[in-house]
Amino acid sequence: MFKVLVVEDDRELNRTVSVYLKQNGYDVVGVLNAEDAYDAMYSNMFDLIISDIMMPGIDGYEFAETVRDTNKEIPILFMTARDDFESKKRGFRAGVDDYMVKPIDLEELLLRIEALLRRAKIATNKHIEIGSVTLDAEEHTAYLNGDEISLTVREFNLLYKLLSYPKKTFTRTQLMEEFWDAESASGPRVVDVYMTKIRDKFSECTDFEIVTVHGLGYKAVLK
Image (cartoon, rainbow, N blue to C red; front, side, top):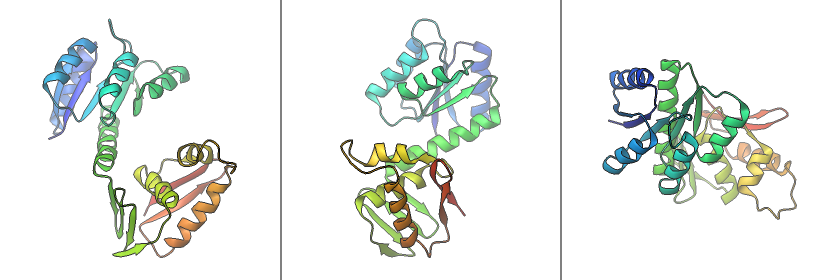
């Protein structure tokens, strides 16, 4: 059973979210502020954190940054009334993985939690299986129908990134910043060359497709 920490100073919302998640199979601890959250984390191992931003004392940004200093992997979801872009940008820079604006749709919250836990499992296991395709990040190997597909390190990393976040669009610039050196003389269009190579190598695969998002970049779509 996954264990979730809910950090929310609105008692009624805290209770509502906690009860709903418990009804859907989660072990939940609800606290009203960051200080109590630190105490709870000291004595419990959580799989995911849901946190408000505006709280008495330590706010959500500082709380997220502190958590990230000690735990790089645990998913953090902000649940807040602040819907402006600057607040979202600050949240993601503090290390959160997802951001929901109040009022919260509980069914959507559940779906987002499931997605975050799925990604966290991929990150922990460093292993992806999608139909006939298997990727192992420890060995940098890829298999299709049991046969190894020869990939360069960069090709593997690009494919692993896209398949870790299906349907999420990554711009060419984002991919360049992550997988090319800052000193690289290559332009963003070099990403197109690599995507063409990956598509060719997985041309017989029927489990996913790398889709070009015109004017932006690429995403993986599972079939």
